Amino acid sequence: MGATACKARATKKDRAQCGGLVDRLWYAKPNSRRTAPIPLLLLTTTLIEQIESKTYRNPVIYAQEIRDEMKRLGLTRREMGKRLGVSSDRITQWLCLLKLPEAKLREIDGLGDYWGRTVITERELRRSMIDQSKSDQNTTT
Image (cartoon, rainbow, N blue to C red; front, side, top):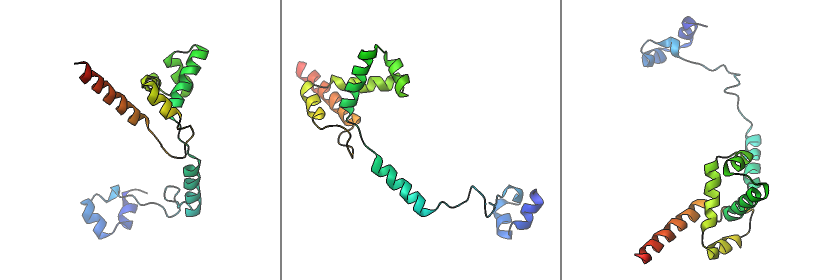
């Protein structure tokens, strides 16, 4: 269906908006796979299952598991990243969380693992590390 078929289906308003370039208009076929409606019940059920099944890990416990696994198997950060399907930089980020003070690590470890919602995030932990290092620098000078 070339430009002539499109011209036959295009209205005067379409031609005016396109500036006469009617052959660039696209009309979906009524039963096209691109425009096929998804049953609302199926969509809603899938979204609810995804929400209910999501669990969040304690970042400190996860970092400890990674560290222990690396030591047990003698892996480098790059090799561990390949096993987990993440970059070596991401492994470094997780391992750096273990540089928090012992008291903070015990507190976060006490929160448990496999949460139903996010209790504490890596970003919050990193921010507390930065704040602590700044306060340590201010007290030493």
